[in-house]
Amino acid sequence: MSWARDLFVAMGDPLGANAWSMRIQYKPLVRYIWLGAIVMALGGLIAATDRRYRIKVPVAAAGIVSPPDPVRN
Image 1 (tube, rainbow, N blue to C red):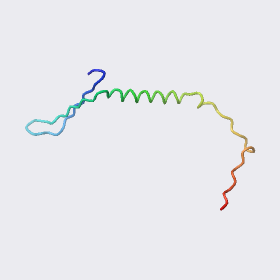
Image 2 (cartoon, rainbow, N blue to C red; image 1 turned 120 degrees about the vertical axis):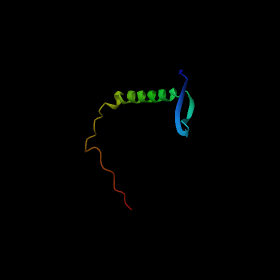
Image 3 (cartoon, helix red, strand yellow; image 1 turned 180 degrees about the horizontal axis):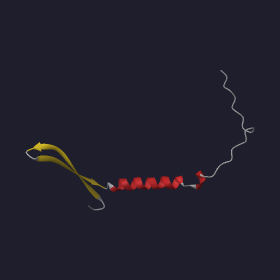
Image 4 (spheres, helix red, strand yellow; image 1 turned 90 degrees about the vertical axis):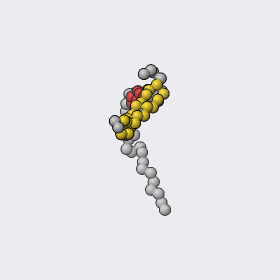
């Protein structure tokens, strides 16, 4: 097989008298689908290791933030 093509062979149902149906499909550039999945996985790993997600933000003091007013009907 070359870089730019893939062949898929599938056996089908028996036709009788020791004969089987076969399907041969030519799927060009299927490897680019796998390459795209690998690139997305690497991007997710790089984003997960980003330092901005690991820095702890100080929590506001309890007296500074007040609860919202209740809704009146």
